[in-house]
Length: 224
Image (cartoon, rainbow, N blue to C red; front, top):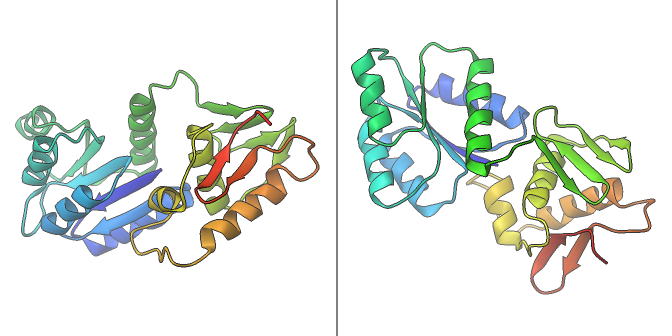
């Protein structure tokens, strides 16, 4: 899952990026409203965390312009203003949730997970492909009942695969969703991490789940 954080307080932005990446999300940061709007328009995000008080373009205007262009990306507003009027204004303008500063990071994570569940319309936090299962709440991965230990980036890559079973995922799509805005797409890092996953997910099993689609990309599927 890829998240855009638009926050002008650099310490707060750095704290959010570090914490979210530890939870296996890919995170881009913008320090003002204009940059945030630009990134939101050129990239596909699964969630935007948007501060209201921003230089160049305030968060409410960024929100308005994102919605005018038809984007339904979930948006969590951060605000130091906790008046009912401000909260109602944000929700009426198209935000999906809000959080008042200062906040506990655990609460922000809970709200992020809730917005993802709402977006995906999932009734369960488990993803499954064949005998491979993944819990999005505990980050536990099992193949054939055996727990599989993954790094944060391996987990993020596997989750993206499992949310898109039987679909060809190009290297471009993978980098957009699993790595951040500064990732160099000319490297072979995607192929390297897919091989890491194969060793942990498919090695020792007769049925392989991760497949190379020559000339296109990769696919996870239960069928031969």
